[in-house]
Length: 126
Image (tube, rainbow, N blue to C red):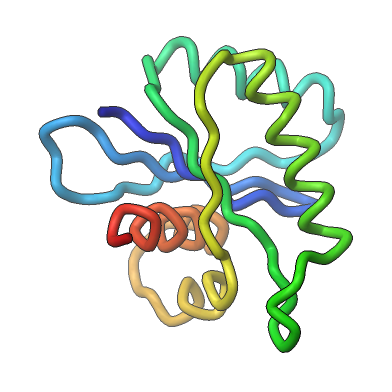
C-alpha cells in the first residue's frame, strides 16, 4: 500500500511517503502556501500521479488538554476537501511533538518533511 503522510501547516505542508514493499518512510517534499486552491489542485494531481492508496494527516491536539483546537478544525476541513477531490481514505495521527522531534533529526530533509515522516511512522506503528 502506498501511503502519503502530511504535516499540514499554515505556511507550508510537509510530505512523506511509505511505498509498498519498502520498510521505511521517506521525505517527499514541501508545498509552500500561496494560493490554497492552486495548491489543493497540485496536491490532488500529485496523489493521482503517484498512485497513493491512503493519506495520513497529522492532527493538532492541545498539548495540555488533549482536546481539539481551532487548528484541528482547520485540518479536518482541509482533509474533507482533499478526500472529496481524491476519493481516497484519509486517516489522522496525533502530531503532538512531531515538529520538536523533527528538529532533533539529522539529514537533508526540510523540517516539515521530517514532521510528516514522524506522523506517518507513528501511524504505522499503531
